Image (cartoon, rainbow, N blue to C red):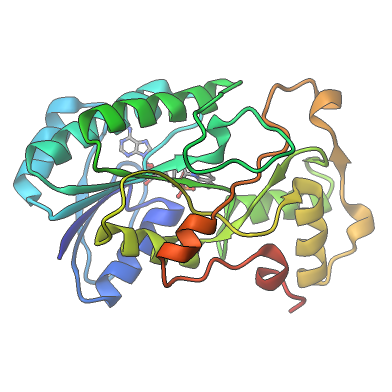
Length: 271
Ligand SMILES: NC(=O)c1ccc[n+]([C@@H]2O[C@H](COP(=O)([O-])OP(=O)(O)OC[C@H]3O[C@@H](n4cnc5c(N)ncnc54)[C@H](OP(=O)(O)O)[C@@H]3O)[C@@H](O)[C@H]2O)c1
């Protein structure tokens, strides 16, 4: 299996490269400003906003499968147009496509979201991820769109945000619930999907919903920090428009995959 990890220098991308190499696959990862640093993975530089460059690179690499992870918060050309360019290039060489999507394309509600719930974005990042899905599905109806949530693990931005809030440098929302997932679990699930006969949107997230503030308290407990120092607020008080409660129902993925998607209380046990 020859797999191209677009965004191989990202948090998830590096883990995908690592696990792909460990599985004995031929792995090519792309980077833009960052580094991949995974022994055994070939590295190419790519800007996904450059459609011709994406087409040329995919044609040169000739992968059996492409995993598309790139996004840049607040940058439509990367998150939406870039995803379309990658899907187009993958389709031209007949490669299997696994596209990374997000829970951010939902508006938020108390009831859990099913795999096939249509996007209802309420802010620009969610709209860009929704547009990416629409483009990817139109170009390649066989592609799988992995809708995931906060990605945890060593080096996670989400965990760093919790540490910052525990140090009083920022505040965590108590009214924004998500279903965090471990980066290793997610990468393992994505690599299973590379060779699985699954198409369309698929929720791949942890089974437990927690607020960002609760996540901060779990990080405090795990790292022996004082949870009393945790700074919290609400989205309403902060005046931001973001999805509030977004629970992803990942039961279909759990039935399809061997990878077990662990919940936060298992991931963040006191250390
Ligand atoms: N992190 C989360 O909690 C979370 C939650 C839900 C969904 N997701 C989704 O999961 C995926 C992976 O997230 P992540 O946290 O691993 O992302 P990340 O660490 O921020 O990595 C983003 C990747 O995109 C690449 N990139 C950015 N602009 C690019 C461009 N113009 N051309 C080519 N590559 C470009 C970056 O390359 P360089 O670093 O080399 O510039 C990097 O490899 C994303 O699609 C995201 O929407 C993430």
